Length: 203
Ligand code: SF4
Image 1: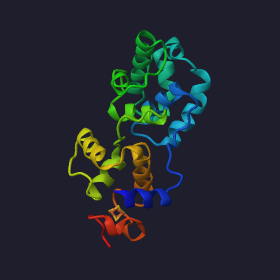
Image 2: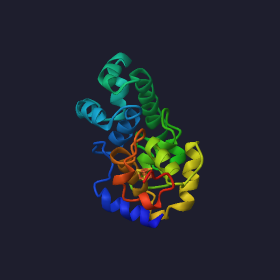
Image 3: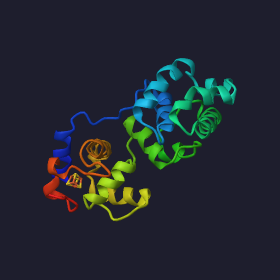
Image 4: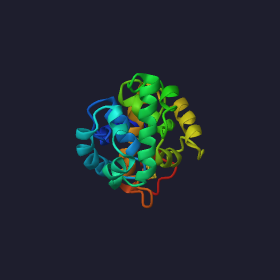
C-alpha cells in the first residue's frame, strides 16, 4: 500500500477535488449535483447557481420548476431538485441552516448517501471514512485491495489497509489515476507507475 500511495502521489500531485465551491453549503450542493455527470458540467452550472442561491432558504423560495431549470444540464434534474429541496428543509429544521460535519448526520439529509457524506466531511477536514466512487471501486479491485462489489464493504476493506493519515488523499489519487491511466475499458498498464505491484497488470 505505501509504495502505491507514494508513487501515485508523485504521479498526480494535482489530485484534489475538481468541484468549485466557496463554503460548506456550496460544497454540499456541488456534490449532490455531481451524480452521473462530469465535474466540468457541475462547475459550469454552479457558477451561476451560487450567485442566485446563497442560503438554504433560497432553494425553497423559488418554484420547483425554476430550480429544476437552473440545474437541468447536470442531468436527472427532477430527482436532484427534489433532493436539494429536501436537504435544505432538513438543514433549516434540524441543523440551524448549517451543514453538519458528522457522517451520521450528513446521511440523514435527503439524497446524501455515504459517498456524498464522506466527500463533504473529508473536504472540510473531518475525514471519517474513505470515499468509494466508481474509480475507487474499479482500481481497488484491480490492485487487489478488495474482492467486494458493495461500496460499503469496499470502504471497510480499504480502511483496514490504508493508513489513517492517507484516508483523505487516497480516493483522489485513485480517481485521478483512474481517469488518466487505469481507464475502465482500456487500462494503460504500460504507462502505469504501479504496474509491477498490480495483480491485474497487462504488462
Ligand atoms: S497496472 Fe494496469 S490495471 Fe493495474 S493499476 Fe495500472 S493501469 Fe490499472
